[in-house]
Amino acid sequence: MDWGTTISTTIAALLTLAVFSFLYRDNPFYKIAEHLVVGVSAGYWMLILYHQTLKQKAIEKIFTDHQWWYVVPLVLGIMMLTRLVPKWSWVSRYPLAIVIGIGAGVAIPLEMKAKVIEQLNGTVDIVSQMHDPRSTLVTGINGVIVIAGIMTSLVYFFFSKEHKGATGFLARIGIAVLMVGFGASFGFTVMARVALLIQRLQFLIYDWLHWT
Image 1 (cartoon, rainbow, N blue to C red):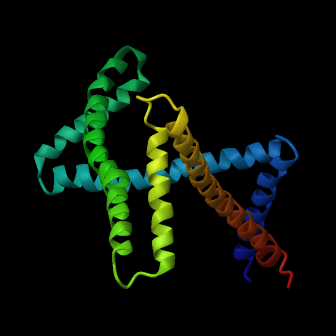
Image 2 (spheres, helix red, strand yellow):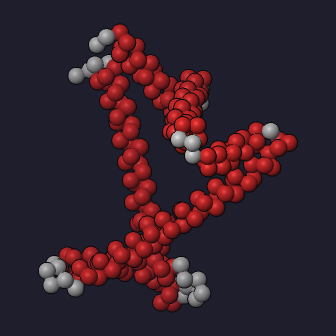
């Protein structure tokens, strides 16, 4: 291993240990690592945004390709920077309104497709699989459980009728189904964090200390 790789690996290992030091308590080593991450990330994204957005989609379009209508988004972007001057910060409301409006117009159909229509398609597919002559008993049982979970979950969100009697019983089952779903999501998040911890420990043990 050359000296450059050794020095960079040692710096990365020391920064990793500085982050781990937060497990003891907040301390200057953790703050140094935290500020480095924020500063390097900000600098990195500034360069990415300059080369991939400002340069490619504004400067080159206007001054190289002579597509002058790109002046409009460039001016809107400059108007955004007026937030840095309190006296002129009201100007930034206009580009912000346009960005929020366009963002909502793009995001709402995508969210509807991903979280509503696709979920409905998945439920319909389960019913279709249950009616398929080639389906097994396990497929049928899984389909019944999934459909029962969906229906009881929907009953929980039905607030036009008081949750008593049969409605309350189904709503409690829906709560249990929702808790299982939230627990699975939380477990997935914990697994991702544990995998990240294992990766850093492997880096310290094998790449830095060269233990075998």
